[in-house]
Image (cartoon, rainbow, N blue to C red):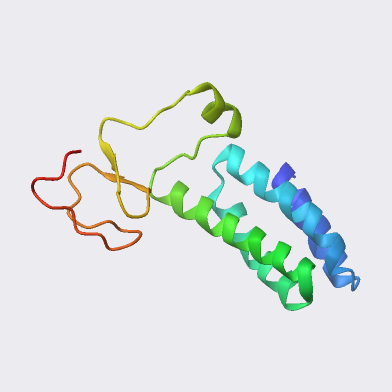
Length: 132
């Protein structure tokens, strides 16, 4: 069984046992492994599980579960579109900088295709005189 699947199983077991707070940790383990391996299915499954966990919680713990779900959804979307997010170490060392085929949106700072006329994240329209 893959590491992400094992973590998902542990999180599901904790949720089934009525301990949703204990499911958050294994959920993050599954998210990290899914991110590391680019496993879109594991990220999507973890996002759905995190939503279930959030439904069973309130307060700060609910916010943590919702953050986990949002993180997994974003990583899965990036993996489906062919983007690979940088790890904190890569960002710190300046490894894997912005590709020459990408540009940064001036409104939301997301990276979009260089030829894009509209930002897919915020809807900003790039003018013809905007430098790349």
